[in-house]
Length: 201
Image (tube, rainbow, N blue to C red; front, top):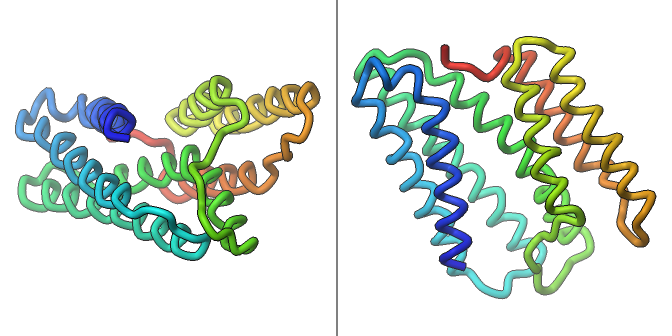
């Protein structure tokens, strides 16, 4: 679990560093922001990992608390930097966090809701049916959100759905992830319509 947690937080550090990179070149204090956000992310996930053998209801509550804490810390720290050092608007980070949730958190949210409805006594870890493709699928959606073109965003949504549909045709007993797709599409389009493409430039 610690190895997985370290890999996960390393990816958080990488993505937040990529987002802050253009501004940090001119304002070196901003290099500390990804470190602060990553440290809070590690702490929240580590505390969550200490909870064992939870049922569907408890797992759902933990998931909501976990995601709220991540988003809350991100907005808190970016707001402090923006207000205290006049380094711009924290809104792009909210959009960034919303997009990440749409891409990576959406399927887990559906999994948690299903466990809650079925009153599962002990919730296991969410398993992605096509883990290698899932990386490509999420990358395409993320690139679509980064772009300024609504057509590229739609391509980042439609192309992965077609590919996943073709994969599903060759598999048995793999449920069609309709709700996962709907959550990703709705949140992705909400982020785009509300804030525009993900960029702090």
